[in-house]
Structure formats: structure tokens, C-alpha cells
Image 1 (cartoon, rainbow, N blue to C red):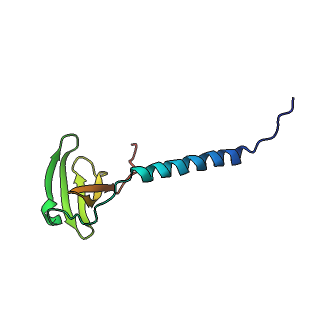
Image 2: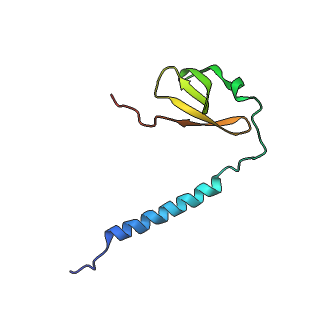
Image 3: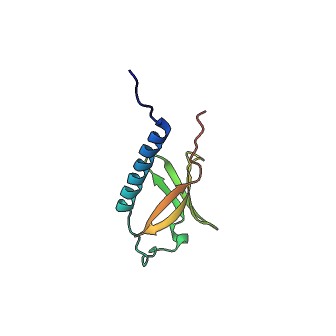
Length: 102
């Protein structure tokens, strides 16, 4: 029995491209629209200090030349730059996303 030839690489690429397009469309639909008029209620210096988080313990937020930086005392790998989003919420962008396994 003879089967017709099939271009598996091109077939996979079409499937992958369709999935990426659909994922991008869904992401755009669920994206939160940022209120451009919103400002933090405090100056960044006033957010700086020591805090306690139940799971990770002591958290230190400092004001640096690049903005606010959050560090967890229990792990040097948990260091994040804080970016103001809106309504006194910040986005944490972790610097080290690759953790050692040893």
C-alpha cells in the first residue's frame, strides 16, 4: 500500500504558527488597560523598607538609581526590579530567572 508523502516539518510549522497566533489574540483580549492618569499614592522613597512575607520571610525594598528593588533575605536569587503599574500595584521583574539545581 502506497501512502502519499507528507511534509511533516511544514505541517508542524503551520500548526505551531496557528497556535501562536491564537495565543497572541487571546492575550490581547485579556490584557489590562493601564490608566495613564494614575500615579502612585506615595513617593518611591516611602515604599522602601523592610517587610515580612509568610512564605519567603524578610523582604527588603530599596530605592536605587534604576527604581525600586525588592530582595528576599532567604535567597539571593530572588531579586526583582519593581515597576509601577497602577492603583498602587507593582510588577516584579525578577533579575535571575535561572536557578541552580545544586
